Image (cartoon, rainbow, N blue to C red; front, side):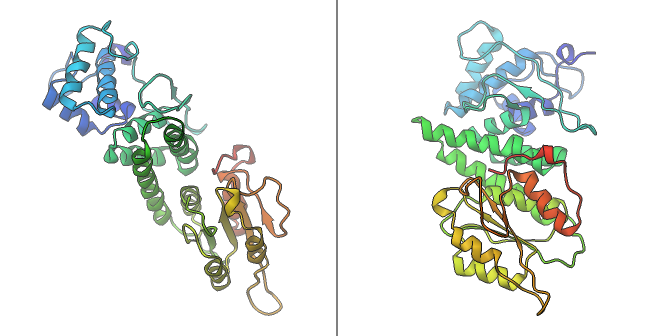
Length: 344
């Protein structure tokens, strides 16, 4: 049996569109835009034309059209597939990706849907973008958590969260569309899922101090640092995340008081990359007299120059490289160097 011949379930359609199954069911109950063919009992099977209708419903509601009016227009698409309502021909919906030992499939999709400049991205990324444009917070959180559970933190960040955040940022910076509210809501839910992961992981027993993570003074971009914090928690490593715009004196105090094995200093732009402060942190010694140590300092973010020359520091190329560099300090397993991905 093929999926194209039998249709797909409501849950599969919801994942593809970036909405919750409850939303799909409520559209059917309120506006009558359910599947044209149904199996016996309570099961719903959505055919390609049905999916195209729901895609149009998503597109119209995201553009501000009232749901009832959007439903009438979307229904017309299924009745007359040749009608000019601004969507592509019906497409089939792929099954949910299966994770194997060889790693998660890319499972990329093209085509319209969110109105964001996404390019060639994963199915989950496109679904997240649709939910973000609709300001559908519950759907965003469900999709983010499902992606984290299925593929792990690194893949979720590099291939779903970060590309969607970047697309939203490019949208409101390069056009007249006001997508600031989309970015704020999306950032909130990304942060929520990352922070949940940061406190959920088991901790390994270690004699070394924690990892201190902080944004430099004046730096407000915390999400990449939150992703690193969650990744460290996923590996069971102890962390102390201090967040945005940590004053220089407070950062120095945090390092001297906690005796960290590593310190991660985040800078999004050159204006916040404080080289003098980085040198001070890298030279901070602690421990018993005669056996004092200094922390490994990672200069993370695009604000730091690619070729850094500050003694006692490293410039990781991406999230996985940063995770591996810190994991070595605790004797924890590391990933493959070829898998290094973007932290920015």
